[in-house]
Image (cartoon, rainbow, N blue to C red; front, top):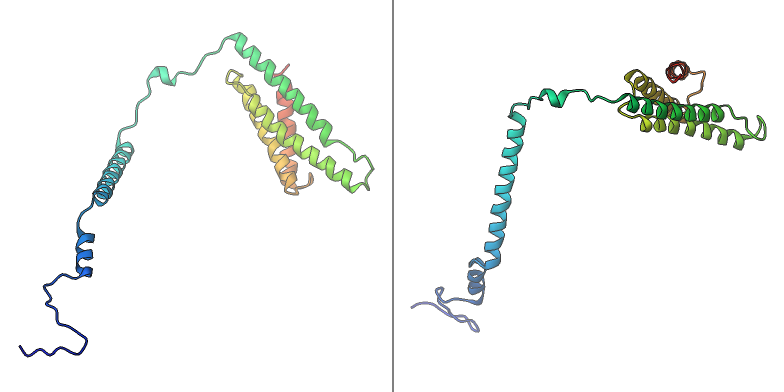
Length: 195
């Protein structure tokens, strides 16, 4: 009807399908992989909702009351207490000897031996820190509370002294001097308890 067709072009009715139209229709058609992806997404969403629900329930549920059997202090035999005392006292003597030896060493080349002084200082720090860890690791639950508390205090103080020394604290620093006094007091207490 009044349409002119330019040279080299042709007229096509819009209702006729093109290659682009058919590929678009194929892309929108559900495929098995799209169905599986949607199913997986739904499963993940359900799991997430259940997890959030369980977390909320765990936060608001009443705390479980402990029975008298659960809260009872464990009891130990005299033999267990004696064995744990012997073990921790032996460990204490080992640490005390090691710390005493390594913190009082003199550099092999005398006061002018910088390398020797650094090596002696490193050994002193190691004996303090590792000695504290060793004691804490050797504490047995059956150790008498008074002895166990003193050993914990001594072990932690040794580690504090070693860590502060590694950070550059000198024995004359007020805080380090306080730690040294605390270690000496704990040493005396443990020595008396281990008799």
